[in-house]
Amino acid sequence: KTGPTALPLPLVVGHRGNSGSAPENTAAAFTEARAAGADMVETDVRLTADGELFLFHDNTGLRTTNVAEVYPLRAKDPITSFTAGELRRLDAGGHVGGQYAGEGVTFLADLPAAVGYDLGVNLEVKEPASSPGVEQAIARMLAEHDDWLRLLETERVTVSSFDPAAVRKAADLGLPAWLLVGTDPDAVLLDGLDPRTEGVVADHTSLSDDGAAAVRAAGLGLWVYTVNSPAATAAVLALGVDAVITDFPANLRAALGGTRG
Ligand code: G3P
Ligand code: MG
Image (cartoon, rainbow, N blue to C red; front, side):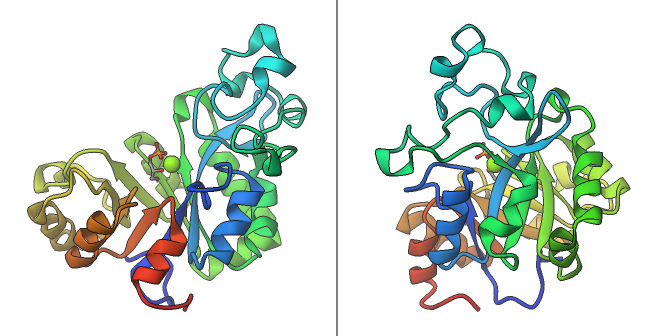
């Protein structure tokens, strides 16, 4: 597997949207990723205290929201300890600049609209221990909503995690499951991989030629994160990866010399 088929490789994947300039994991960032020529967006998925799927990287709201103003006594609490209604009161855009003020925390249900209904989506299950049941909730969301079903049926959705147990659960639920690795994905690591895993998403700074070859020899797809500099981009393109996750999808699209396929 390479990921979504019927698209020219390598895929351009906007990391947390167009996070090089827009506030990460917000609707604005996803909309901008599309305009920048991305094929897909990557986003981090968590579960609220009352069971709604939302898109958020950190385990607190301190860096990317005004949680300290809105909930001063709870600002350092896990972001997953808030209900969906509480998260809807936060501003997740103002930290980047005044033009993004009012941009809220984004919920998974709203993502297809933000990416224009046809862009691909890589759902990273973030810290699943703090979001119990997140894999089942994702599977339900994809199966029960037409927008998501269409993306799934056209192979425009992948589910990834650094947590092998979450990857296994995603595969159990019939979802396209990818393993994130922060080390070189050498043959030893791949030996223990659940056979239903479609591919590996590797940290480009750790990926060796041998590691890339081992992924290919195992018949797996190979994606890399988070590739931003021209030199790093040239290096991963030379390795022949299937997708590149970047904060600057417009730069990668330009380096590939074209418009979205
Ligand atoms: O999914 C690739 C990348 O997003 C993994 O690292 O910390 O940015 O979620 P992180
Ligand atoms: Mg991520």
